[in-house]
Image (cartoon, rainbow, N blue to C red; front, side):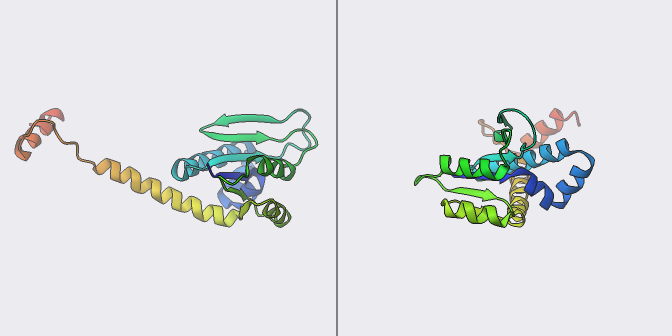
Length: 169
């Protein structure tokens, strides 16, 4: 399974809606990014890991899985970049491709040397816009699905039944 590793704070700082939200509430900005990545995962089927830098926070690495997205807060004295590099080494193999979403040029070069591909924050934003368009199309398509009766009934009779069902005369 292909994977996308997201440098959480880098993306939050790069996307205007998340950046604005961060100014008011950092936790909400993180949650919104995780929501976006959950939608991305649903459409692409990628394994998605969002890494948040807890470099100056005491304690061990914390991993949680929410909305089918893996979220990692780095351990004490570990940067998000170091954690991402460790994850790339662990996940990358001949059966899957690993993408890293970051606009940090140094990090892009490092992960590229390890065999991962990079997505800039702007590229990921454009992909997210496509994902949201796909979701809207899918929802619209689901709303238009006509449920067929197992019993052959004329269209006129079905319309009468539908009016009765809705309480109309």
